[in-house]
Image (cartoon, rainbow, N blue to C red; front, side, top):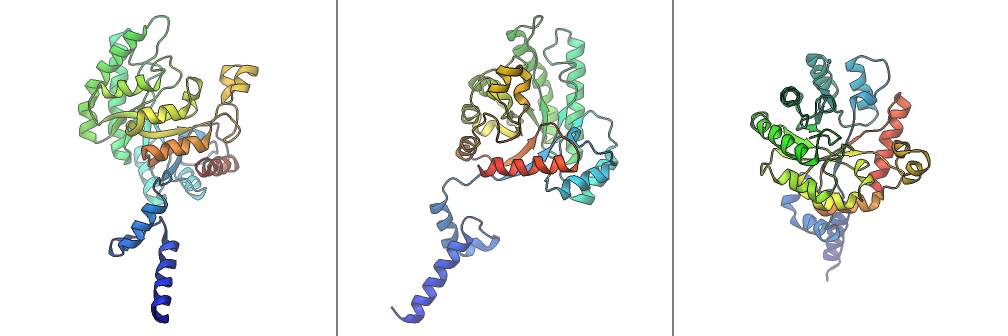
Amino acid sequence: MQRRDFIKNTALAATATAVGASVVSNASAEGFISNTAALTNPLARPMVKKSLMWGMVKEDLSVMDKFKLLKDLGYDGVELDSPDKLDMKEVLAARDKTGLLIPGTVNSMHWKLPLSDPDPKKREECAKSIEKALWDTKEYGGSTVLVVPGVVNASVTYGEAYERSQAEIRKLIPIAEKTGVKIAIENVWNQFLLSPLEAAKFVDDFNNPMVGWYLDIGNVLRYSWPVSWIEALNKRILKLHLKEFSFKKQNDLGLWKGFDVEFMEGDNNWPEVNKALQKVGYSGWASAEVPGGDRKRLLTIREKMDEVFKA
């Protein structure tokens, strides 16, 4: 081999190694780079955008200044409630000024007026609130509305919750299709949809891409391991909520105290969660849903989220 050819080939190899998996836009003209990345990194780590809930921001600031604060702290977005009392024009101005995105909203009525309520008028009122949330989310530029589908209790059987909630969600699918905003079902200790296989079936019953799942990693740990939920729900997962849970605190101090633990200090096996997300090819938003606070606290949460996805 000529010396100049050896130098040339060595330089090409070094370039491919340096670029690795982070392929730039002109990679199509240099196919060897993408091929190298595919061989060395067959399961890419989940590309996650970090968000949090609007109510976690406890500093007394204007909407604009809260958006600026979150952007400065390294967040990519913030989730809002809908319906709510925020001025939409003010929110949109803050979004456009700061570049902080609004990935979606959380329906604010599904606990007070669940879709499984025995009273059809209450179910209708909840459905109307979800319809408004779908239109609001479209204006915000988001892609999902989180909906708790129903609550099972002494006056509502499991079967009734299943039938009623599905009937109400079916009515909302045409609105979801018009807005382009998906209905994201979440399990929130509502004594309903307690297993990952059942959760998957609940989504599949609609046979419509506008209905999916909002997976809360901390919530499901009470019922079974998050990896099982990720594997079962697979492409049905639209977004993630992040929180920790400690079985020790649950057993020693009471059920709800299980959430009173920082990221990386509970019983979530984050390396296994990340592997499962890689396996199903998840890429998208992850929103923290933990006790918030001031600037210092919110920065800590964002840094902990970084640790979670590096685990």
